Length: 293
Image 1: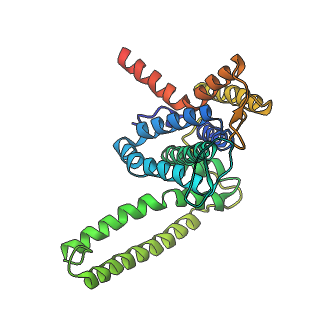
Image 2 (image 1 turned 90 degrees about the horizontal axis):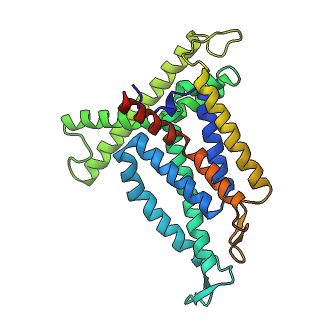
Image 3 (image 1 turned 90 degrees about the vertical axis):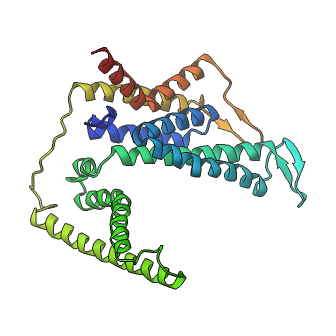
């Protein structure tokens, strides 16, 4: 049974949620919004993927954050708060450093949300949502989403088989290793082409994309999904209205300035956190129910 309660909601709810949180993450550059979105994204990614997500964030995302924060001031010298002068004579400004940090936060946040999206939005959900509207594109998207995991698993199988006969990339000298690697890659490409042909023949034999074709679906829009839809519409609507009137506006250049802190702005931050933390809230509530019973 899937331990993630949010994943068991209707695909429309899942898709709508990710469209909202990813859209807001790309548009709202206020530091508080970035921190809230990144915190919720990383927390949900760790909940879904466990130690794998922690290792990925520590080994790749943390160095990426540092590099981006350092690279931006080296090429961008806008800002009024000059901290020092570089050997080239260009100024090092506080605004350029903080803008680099915010850009890194934004990129890491989007990557984290996409990792959650990939775990929740399975290929069958994609086909269910877009199969009747754009059948060919929905099939391509669903196959693309599982492309990397399937190839990773298959190349491990091929590599283990080659290792048994002494033809793995860890056997022999550099030239032999290169030949073994090319052999493994050739086997993988052959498998991929044969699999693509099998998939195409299978979908054609089932009449995929033909007009009037019906499809079995296990998804039903129940009362729980209605409540989730109202929750998303209410939180998303409040955030969109607040952003439209400028309560979440923030500029880094030429100086850092944003909307004045007010009760309304704090309320918007609370709604934004409630939106981003929706899967976490659902999972915590479900876990508490299980513990009580």
